[in-house]
Image (cartoon, rainbow, N blue to C red; front, side, top):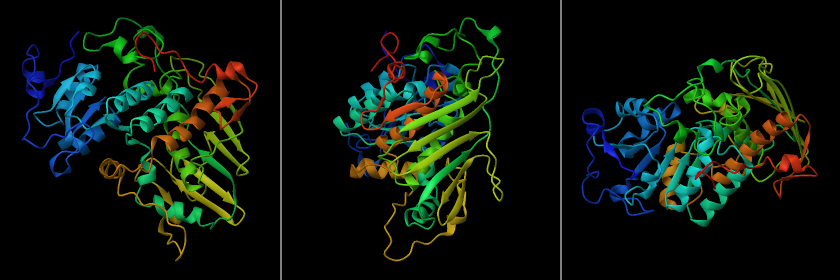
Length: 425
């Protein structure tokens, strides 16, 4: 079937019409991989629901086309978009276009890996929401594609671009806590819900097969889609992969762990006793590192430390003291180190101008952004390893260099998936 885009007017007023090409002033659109006049970066967005609406609101003037497999999601997005913005239901139509410089991927997690790889292959720079992938093999493929094709890939762990994040990072990097040997993360439980009795045919406005894409086939259920995808191990992976991607991104950045990994991971949790969701309600994860000698713990629920009103965050324990960092997914980042001033001569820490702004600057300079795909993959690995240890019900020994489990072939077979139909790496 031909892949076509339609304008907002066509979408809202004459669905049967075939859209004309997007028309903008001459010189504004860019050549492949190069910003256009006045450094305007033209973006195609895939998946404008949920967090995607936030990005659409902020980047509205640069988004030329929006894709979603749900007509209702597209209609809501078109209330925010510019009148001339086009729409389509097959994301490959965006990748086909030479007038698109970059792709904003805000589709559900199980699509992140494949879409990012294909966007890099098509010569597009990428902003992809966190977590970067749902399997280790996907994340590895994303890094390789970005490097092979020279693409700038920013992952949406916005905490690194929070206004005071660099101060907290400077505090810890400058040894104000001494040797940090333990980090305890706290978060509230995964929800219980979803009604299996709602399984049935998908509504006409939703392409269910396309929504599933590379994931294994399951029957349509309204309790699986949109924000609820987070509570399924195949699609989202629960709080440890959702907010964990934010919190653990900061742990890695603050402690200079972007190129390091654990040697062992242990996870236990209480599975839900009713409903459709399959992520564990409660969960405790321990990642053990040897270089440096460090233990990171995720407790769900965890005890909110005295003095913090954040619903999630982490406490850093060093031999000179401890530091509470509340939040982690953006502007809500809080800590006693938020006013820290690095001493003269201390090692500089990059201060992001903002997560979108950092991405745009790197598209122009071709430098790597603050949450480049490689450190994002490293943070996502922690989340993925946690869920694998929970699913297998035993500690897992991990070799960071080879990205393989040691002496555990069953676990190694779970590092990737074969995809479904045409949707595979």
